Length: 239
Image 1 (tube, rainbow, N blue to C red):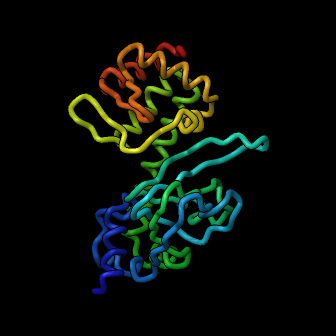
Image 2: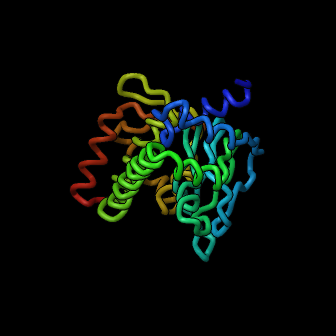
């Protein structure tokens, strides 16, 4: 097996959509895929584009986002190594529902539409695995929507920081230190609010010992306390 194909199969194995599949199931996908290097700031695709395939991040980071007619942006997700993106338009053949932008030099595995469709038709095990993985994503999105609808900003910010800590931070005991910088603008775009509102809520969390601002980065000294804040605020509907 060539080093390139070996890297492609390794990338598929690390992606939750394909983890657990047999080498025989992964092989045709790996053969049909290609590795792309994307410079920082590059728009990988825009909302409304025709789907060209599914991408898996090998290294780097990609921001998935939408915007309204006034240009206000909402970040849906930060995709890092092992994450996939572009699944929706791949499966329903409709235009892209969101935009994707590389935040740093990013290496992605691109699986063309035809290759994925052929594999799903030929291998029911892959189709079932993909459906179950997408159900997990759907459940997560339902939970996120519930948080937006029924929680105040305090709870939503606490929950978002808690979730980000488990994907973008080094966790040591009850504390976490982010491995990348999340600006107040980043957090505002994740929650659909203004930067000023985020600054106010961060000060409140800092006052309660749940957030420490160190230079340009954040540290979360009490993850259990942060989780409790999110749950308590959600139940009370405060914020």
